[in-house]
Length: 163
Image (cartoon, rainbow, N blue to C red; front, side):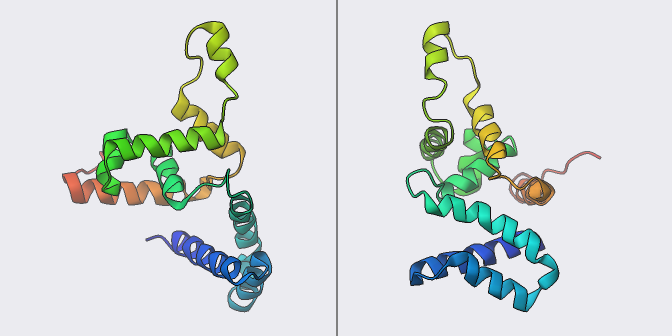
């Protein structure tokens, strides 16, 4: 796992623990970061604020499995590939994608579909676009995500990307 991914997971763990104890999550995390690695605190605080925004709105916040599915969608995986990678059914993936669409896009595009009589937007592309606009996807981490995907493809299918 990439160092940044480990840092993100640890930050999330600290946030969840603080929330469970009823403590101000961002304050707890800022204190821990300042003690451990002051040079990365600005990046971590920015990252945490995005996560904290997800936590504050329970109805609209993404669950961990929805976020995982969002990242797999960003990487361009099909429903079947996500199902195989995450060891769930294709229907489970479709349910997660439906929840992502409802939470991120909602019914904003319904009037266009009705007036045009056809689908105007690709739902997966809309989910990714909205996630990018909201800052839910760390573009700096895409290379690490792609590396994790390549590791999984190599392990499962003996796949090696041509250079």
